[in-house]
Amino acid sequence: MRNDEMAARRPLVIGCGALANELVELTRRAGLPAMDLTCLPASLHNRPERIPGAVAARIRRARAEGYDRIFVAYADCGTGGLLDRVLEDEDVARLDGAHCYEVYAGRAAFAALADEDPGTFYLTDFLARNFDRLVIRGLGLDRHPELLPTYFGNYRRVVYLAQTDNAELTARAEAGARRLGLTFERRLVGLGELAPAVAAFGRAA
Image (tube, rainbow, N blue to C red; front, top):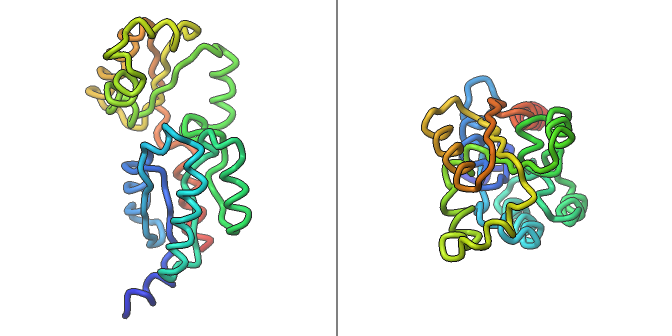
């Protein structure tokens, strides 16, 4: 079978790089239909205005490669609805929700967390693993620690929405909370609504 014939038969998930580990687990898990996976750089989250264009370009490339069944594993992710405009034009669905925290926790559970304490900074496995690079160095706090109150003065706690029961990641997340001067909570949420969304796409395609 030629590669282009295979591509035409298999659905494709275009995912955020921050979800890459979880998407690999899902798309390779026994019991789900075969599907292909590609991820865009997680660094796009630092410039969310670039996400719609990057997703649109990847969809068009995928179609040129022969894919006609595509799902985008992004939430809105700070694009202010611009990603939805792209996906409407391309007739492609995405994850429900405003961001990955809502996807992982579940929409109702996340709303309850936000109502409980709006001053909450959220971490996922990806963010716990990359805390120093994305939070400390990414915000320049390694060079300008005096900016810590500016960025985090209105926060009171860190909630780690854990995908895995991993002691090392929990320790990293807790250390990150201490570094920010915030209280720490851990909620083991697993893959949340990501798993059923990918499974439904695979079975419907």
